[in-house]
Length: 209
Image (cartoon, rainbow, N blue to C red; front, side):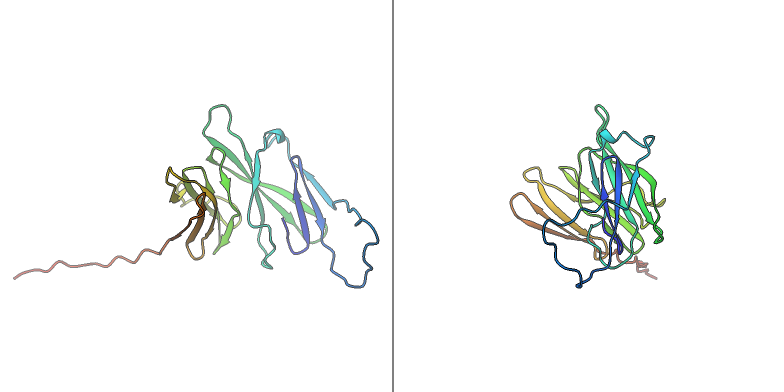
């Protein structure tokens, strides 16, 4: 993950944080191999949260820094236990106070179908949209921009049902415009637009005198 002034590397047992120095064209080029820099911070995970050996994957918002300050959120996905059909997701936030201190917060847990393919998340209008492909459907989950659950959101949202004859290679969803774009294994691009429902109008039935 990248912020305005830090580079964050996610490891199995901890996170490593490097402070980004200002760019300069005055320093000479490297005469040999680039120098190695140790991280400025290393924050271990609490052992009570989960077993680091059970971590399966990680996912989060797009890694590219856009110039807009956003929470440094990411999820760790743990494989299901035994015959469970769902994987557990643990959400974390890295908090940098700008004064040389860092903190790792455990925010929430949720469940997703087993072995999901998660795409980079999107921030939009105070919300964070997570979506994934589970082999038969593309589904989404909406939380607040701080990564916390939204009470009025019930369950996951079905974005796209995949035909049994093909599969999805990659997908991208823009919650601001409501557009889902996905590429299947036959190199066909599917575009789905979600429109705001029109307000209901009260239609009066004609009456006869």
